[in-house]
Length: 624
Image 1 (cartoon, one colour):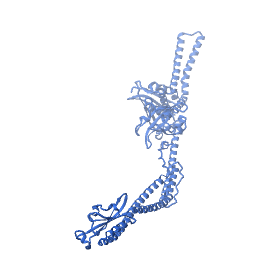
Image 2 (cartoon, rainbow, N blue to C red; image 1 turned 180 degrees about the horizontal axis):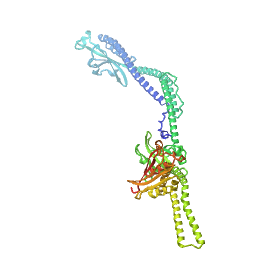
Image 3 (cartoon, rainbow, N blue to C red; image 1 turned 90 degrees about the vertical axis):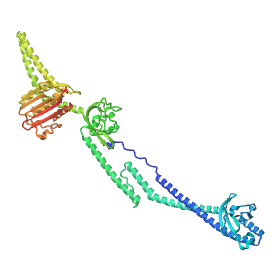
Image 4 (cartoon, rainbow, N blue to C red; image 1 turned 180 degrees about the vertical axis):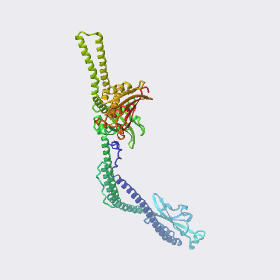
């Protein structure tokens, strides 16, 4: 699984409740249509009321003009009673709340309402101009009235009583109060009818608009939303209907094209993830990817799962410290080197050794090669994990294989001392039987046997030192004994192949920080490779020297040499090109390089075809 696939996905936004768009559109339609209807209703009510007022004002003006003519006729005839009767009769008419005749000074001389007689209302006559009718709305005793003012002009026939025309242009003022409640009732009734008609029209309009929206917008969008939900749930085969040639139809077609591309990209991404996982599973070493922020394991390969004895899916999502170390919290930094703590930039990498805990409880020694990778999911730690238990097994197998090749030489080294001791024992037995057991002679036999026993013990001790498993911790190792003992073990093999071995040790004692068994195996492999390079005999020189802060081991042969194309691969595992034609394991030089690098050294090789090869090993001196 890739880091992107294993990384926790962002939560999808919560779906909005169904019908939200419908309710919002209806609310807005009702608000707009209702507001428009209310506005038009108020406007109509005002215009209609104004029209009624103008009509009533004109009617009042006509009534006032007719009444003024009757009044003028009665005034010319000085018919006061007739004038009073006209006022009373007019005030009793339906729709007329009262009639008054005022003097220019504002005194009420005639009134249909007895309570108005004799009142002084100068404000009603102030500013009036002859022949100009005026009207206004007012409220009296809780009743709304439309009051019209009709000045009665002075005429030549009236000069005798009312004075000069210029000085007294108005003889009086006729005031008629009309009930305005009917106007308001008519306005409200008309406004109610208009509002009802508007509501009916609005309802029909909304119903039609709703049907159109439902059919052309809401239903297509709902179908599109259902398709999107199906795609989000993983059903990549769902598509929206795109039959209409309008905006929603084109939107559905575009959505389907997007879904097709999305499905193709997801399929391609899945294939790439599968291919990447197959590549990871094909690696011999374990691999895992850890998110640095929370220690979560995002990806592993099959080799890592085999190392711990678990399935790959069971490893995903777990903290690395729980998965490989069995801890409930991050590993203490004082106990081991943690790549997640040490690595802080993409340019960094490190190599460390851990002991992982497998599912069955066993401890697996591993070497971790870690590096930091910047990714969209955050900083990732990529670990390549080498199972050292396999490396130890291969190394030990190689040791046993090399020791098997030494069997003939070891047998010869032990056989000769044993033969000498056999002769000495036979001589002692004969001397004792013949009574010739001279102390000096017996002492000579015993000393010779002791020397031969020491010789056999030295051979077996060198063999044991070479064959034992290496220690986990490096220690101070004397270089010269390890080199000399190993070369001595191969003396018989050298003589049998007509090879002259020359050992040149440095004048000063040299010590390195390593493992004695590893150091002996390193020299053994280099010397045996030199023997293989000289199938027809030759000269082998093994020397040591101090090279500054390092100790140098040099193995030089006069063999056939190594071609350039082969020289570049001699340290590769299982690559074997022996000059003697025999098949090898191809692990000898690989183990040599691993040993040298493990203890902080380096190994160099130089070869000339037909002249020979020299290997130089540099190891840090223990003193440094």
